[in-house]
Length: 114
Length: 112
Image 1 (cartoon, rainbow over the protein chains, first blue to last red):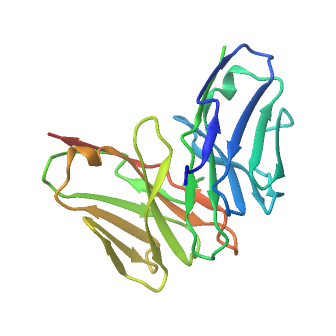
Image 2 (image 1 turned 90 degrees about the vertical axis):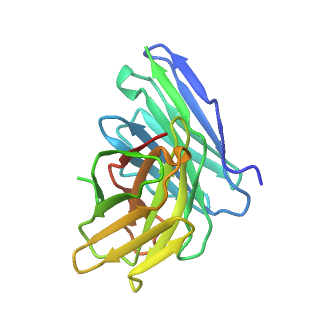
């Protein structure tokens, strides 16, 4: 298994531009999580999906952030418009359906908004 | 504030020594997990301990859980340079255990 796949690995953009981060979960995993990691705030859960349905988006910072999971094998996190304070590493993680399952993280997307 | 708080924030030891990291949490849990993050990488699951377990071992890792004190510790024995990483505890924050809250992490440096 290739594990959780994220793209791009690095993204540099200018303030005001739209940014789209992509995630391909591990096959068979039915929960998908988007996290943001910064030095100041640590690892924050932004949103998670269960069976492609958004369950909890309380961590999404504001309306500029949106996430979709159109099918079991793909999810996107979009920031529009981007701002310098959005600079962070964004991780996608997935999990199987067992009660004591653990999360498997992708390599992350390092985003820099200038 | 975060559910889990690791202590110390940073730890440097000589290769071969044992490293101990602690985690405190606030609410009742049914399991606690430890993850490792190497620089520039995603988190990797190390070990899960259930609330009815007091101690668990996996290779050079030993985890303890004290639910009365709402705390856990991770011990790495005979440390190696490759153990240099950040270590996070994580606790579930919903009934289904899908949602985890991660602590602030301990940055461990092993000096060769």
